[in-house]
Amino acid sequence: MTPRAITIRPAEPRDAQAISAMSRDFIESGLGWKYDAARVLRAMRDKETLAVVACEGGKGQGKGAVSGAVAGFAIMEFGDERAHLVLLAVRPSHRRLGIGQRLLDWLLESARVAGMASIHLELRAGNDAARRFYRSGEGKKEGALRMLRVLRNPGPVPYTWRPPKTEAPE
Image (cartoon, rainbow, N blue to C red):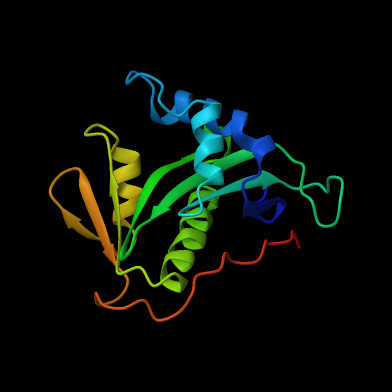
């Protein structure tokens, strides 16, 4: 699998089951499963939440649709001035290909456009791989488990947020 064969796009209802299974298996393992398909669907429908997926290339039905398997996903909630990265996961078979960074970049740009001042996230204490991933960016770390990325000075939102256009495979 090459990074070019992966398309990042907004999540659709048909992705909810794959997202929830990945959350259960790669994020919530040992914690109790909170993000089942119904909860993921509710998040997708929430106008203050953005869910994106990384899909293996391949055109689906309809104009510009990508139907490949979900290789990764991310969900971010937007507040008045701060966003919260709720979940981000990439299948083990697709890690270290830049997919997680592309998902994160999409969310960071969306947060900037939405006028967010910062992004917050939490990690499990023993998730060293995730800690390295987030520390490789420009984030300011707070404590052992909480991380923060400042996007702008707090204040009025400069303009209205719109989701970025869907990437097309090259």
